[in-house]
Image 1 (cartoon, rainbow, N blue to C red):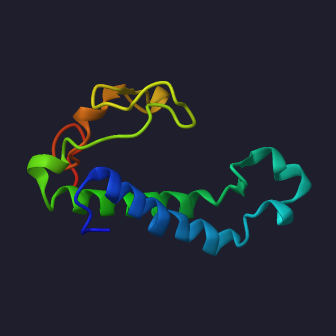
Image 2: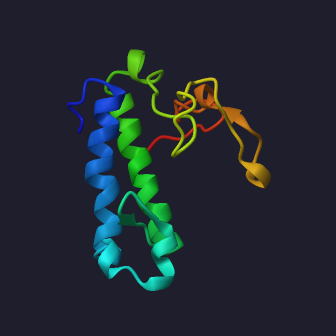
Length: 128
């Protein structure tokens, strides 16, 4: 994962490795045949995503954020501005950009992605 030369390569390695590992460990089999009848509405692309407890979710995604930050700071001159994908999950409309606005609702002010790409600078100011 840390050998990835581009954001897209890193994202793919992160998604297929650490990101998917914990949900499978916590909830076991997510496949359609074993999904409880009431949960089948949550199936996307043949996979069932069951909710995991908030504590595990938060810790797991903090770890993913740490891994991304570590990768970014292995080549900050380029990696702190590398960002790609779709602007909205399950949308084919628009590519994501650093100018996209993240709306945090009541949790805080909306910010552009470019403002929070580097966690060691404002407004976040944290380092793992």
